[in-house]
Length: 187
Ligand code: HEM
Image (cartoon, rainbow, N blue to C red; front, side, top):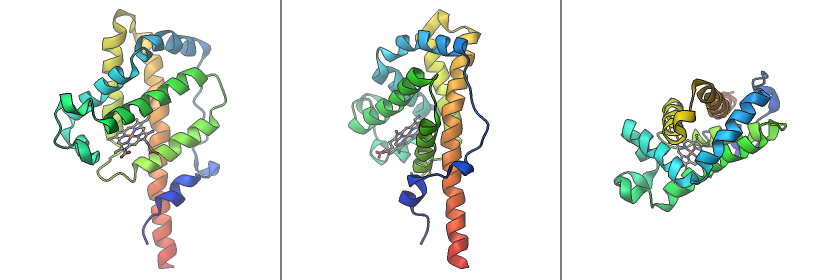
C-alpha cells in the first residue's frame, strides 16, 4: 500500500530526467572556485546561518525536523542533527564546486534521489527550496562582502538553481511514482 520510498529512491530511470543540460563556463567555474574558500573555511558556521535564516522566515520549517520544534537558536546550533544536516548540505556544495568541470550524471542522479527522499519527510514542501536559495544568496553576500558583485552572484545563483532543479525533479518523480503505484493497485 502507498508509496514505498526505498523503491522510489533506489533508482530513478534516466529517461525520466529532463534532458537539457546545465553547463557552466570556465569563467563561471573560476568565479565560483575563487570565492568558495571564503565560505568553506567555516562550513558549519556558514551553513548554520542559512538554516537559521530560513527558520526565522518560515518557523514551520523547524517542525519538519521533529527534535528541533521547541529549540531556541543557541540550543539548535549545537544539536547533532542540526549540525549533521548543515554539514551534509555544505559538503554537497563543496563536492560540486570541486567537480563542476567533470561529468555530472552520477551526481545528478544522487540529487534526484535526495529530492525523492525529502518528499518523504512529513511537512516538507518543494516551495521551501525557494526560501533556501534566497537565504543562501543572502548569507553568501554577507560572507563574501564587496567581492559579491553581480557577476559573482549570478554564478552562485546558477549553481543553486542547478542543485535545486534536480532536488525538485526528484521530489516530483517521487509523487508521480506514487500515482503510478495507486493506478497499478486499482487496475
Ligand atoms: C528547506 C529546506 C530543507 C529542509 C526542511 C530539509 C529537511 C531535511 C530533513 C528533515 C532531513 C532528515 C534528517 C534526519 O532525520 O536525519 C533531511 C536530510 C537530508 N537533507 Fe535536507 N532539507 C532541506 C534542504 C536540503 C538541501 C538543499 C540539501 C542539499 C543540497 C539537503 C541535504 C540533505 C541530506 C544529504 C540529508 C540526509 C539524507 C539521507 O539521510 O539520506 N537538504 N533534510
